[in-house]
Length: 369
Ligand code: NAD
Image (tube, rainbow, N blue to C red):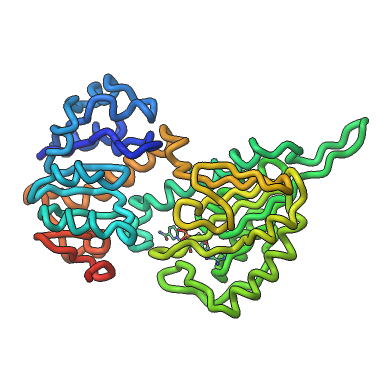
């Protein structure tokens, strides 16, 4: 049985779905691995390192033709077109936003798994790509916001006077937000954060940040739900009051399967002083901040920079790939049985939870038409 690692084709995607370490492990399980030439370049993994680990180097055609195809990004149209009946694809399909691709994979009778759909259970943690990548994104968000900020992060007491520390506000204290809090704290900023999930308050405080706002009753599976109109109004009032005194705001709020909630309005941005920075980590999924553009920095007339973050894990490709590859490997272990070969075990909640297409149809309960 062959595992294929194509080079990622989406613009800006530097990660790769395998590492020398995971190649070694696949080989140890008796699987052959074919890596497309140059697939690891963006993640600083040379072809020689993959070869040394036991992989064969090949063409895109060969990598995409393997029994199990592993990818970071969903296939491009031409890649999906080339896939064949019975192949297994494990990746992130962004399934709520890519219906035509799901239809195409079903039509091609590909067995596809989308790891964003894994239930957030303890057993799934080792395969949780959302967490491994969001953690890095939260860190990088703070680094990027700081790089744009022309004042100083920590308090500095010097003979020439005292420099006050930056005030840093994190909206959304999930995996990315908590890492953003920890990173900003390490840099000496005064950090506050908000979230709608009740559990977030304690997590924020345990990292030494101040929690602001009033959490609402939770949504499903530990995720946030969309707020009612009244709740949104109350949140907007609180955020408006708080944001005008902040130097840097990083927003990370998401609701699975929906457009990101709009939390920071243009008016709130206008209330901030010149030189402030707002970084929108949700820019790719609709944006928490009015006026943010994915991959761009917009400077307002009032001198506030709005950074529309786009695919930050790809900008930390070596670390992001190592963790992502390990997540995939742990998931693939559920599909490969030493005696039975490739199996889709319908009794395994993780396998069923991530299964999107099989036998010519879209089978995931949340995605069926
Ligand atoms: P996410 O990326 O879906 O959202 C980021 C954060 O934004 C969340 O904390 C969410 O509550 C918050 N948010 C959504 N709407 C908001 C709004 N209007 N205002 C303010 N904040 C808002 O979340 P995530 O980082 O994937 O984490 C989601 C949950 O899953 C968390 O409870 C996390 O602890 C849990 N989790 C569990 C496991 C596990 O047990 N395997 C692993 C990872 C995460």
